[in-house]
Amino acid sequence: MAEYNYRKKKEGGILIRALSYCVNLLLILAVLASCSTVETNSMGSKSDGLVKGHYTHGVSKMRENDYQGAFVAFKRALDINPADKDSLNAIGLVYQRFGNYKEAKESFQKAIASDKNFSDAYNNLGITYAILGQWTESIDAFRGALANPLYATPDRSYQNLGFSLYRVGKYDEAIKAFRDSLTRNPNNSGSYFGMALCHNAAGRYGEANDAMMEGIKISPDYKGNVKKAQNDFEQKRRTSTGTSQQDYANYLEILNY
Image 1 (spheres, one colour):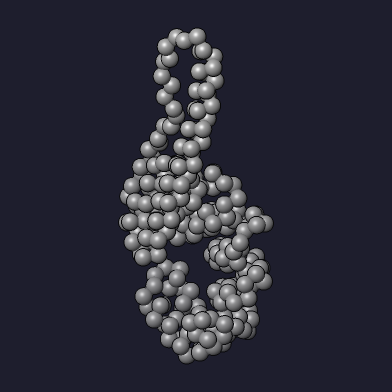
Image 2: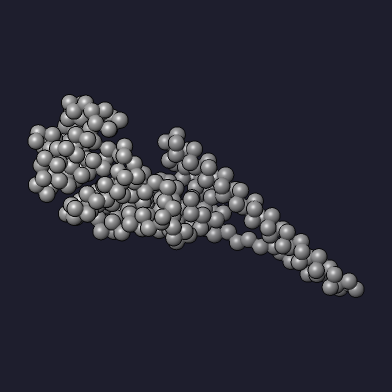
């Protein structure tokens, strides 16, 4: 939602033509002023509808994994209204999908500028920072998402915050974030896996194993099947790189406690 950094603004307005002199000049001007207001409102409503239509089309394209088509749709929405927060957030996800992280960050930041309480944009910005290994910035972004008391899915940002805190060695703070995630969504198995990593790093091996087993038990992928989880972790350890590879290696280690 790519290698495109188009920012074209459209100028709106109503062209007022010169009126020839007539006796009823004041009345004509009054009528024109009234018509101008109606036309402007009508144009605004039509533009809003077009923006929403392009945005909805882009979302449907994303669901079809047609990210190029999604980009075009969101771009059309932003051509009409460059400050539309939903389209900015969505096109940021497309940039992120294509690995254009600079453009992704800029889009999420613009979405936040349009709405300071836009938690989804904060969360997506935090994920982008995390992908780049910019953990301090990701922590700030996730906390920005959680600052909104009306955020509908705070469990996601609490979990993401927990992993970023884990990366910088703040294990107890990370565990608190994971627990906050589980308070809001008890079926969030990823938070149990995150807690297991934190306990393991802190040398609390029994707690690490307990958390790991709880995560495997509620995970829809494993449903308590430890052998299946072990095989999956081993496969992902072989195909992953960097911090993800180390995480899966740690999971396997924890299962042996």
